[in-house]
Length: 276
Image 1 (cartoon, rainbow, N blue to C red):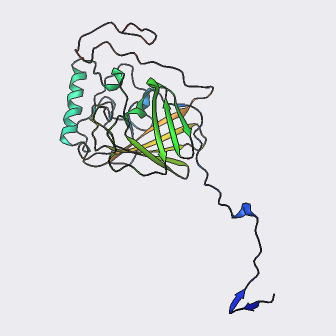
Image 2 (cartoon, helix red, strand yellow):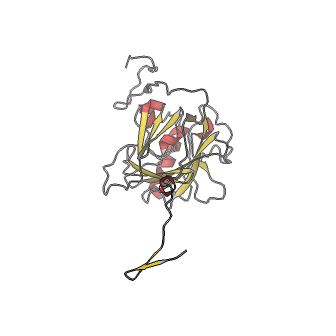
């Protein structure tokens, strides 16, 4: 092939390529379509084998592993206040709640009073979960009490997000994993079922990934909060795919039988009753 020299420049013939090959193909993202739910054994965070920063675990089930035995119905939530990850205020809160359960009291928290669950506590709830994925956001729907979270994809956190039940969640995809980063939480909810308080400095990172066969959705959850923890800790929640479902049913919260304002007992309402 001959080259032509023009005004001191060497011109090399270019061969055109199809436009389709020049366009960058967007990276594939995991498809979490469908419905997911977990059983009673996953209403507390499961420690990760080999990780020395585990979540608070149940002192009535200290041998908990990723294959935790089925939790007996009605078993109280008595956490281990001696977990080294807890700061003194957090350990005191866990011990206080444990003592209340031991005394025979039914301990009511925000979720039992029909309040939102907060993050990461919402991951422990029963009921269906559905992920609605769009290019710039993900909406997570929870059957329990019609709770909804929104995750803004490929965006940065606000400088000073106003504290709220679910905080401000931004996310991105790392290969087959959806990473959700949440700050801006308030102190009205609890971190877990054992009484660890949530504060405005709580920071939660959730990593959602499907199992290789698509039958499970594993949430790897890391929590840090200098007010409550001496260091960050991690645990998991595993959802199973629920086949045959076409929609999330309407499930209305029926508040328990104790007034949040006065502490007085009143008849227990049921889900289909309006006698509040």
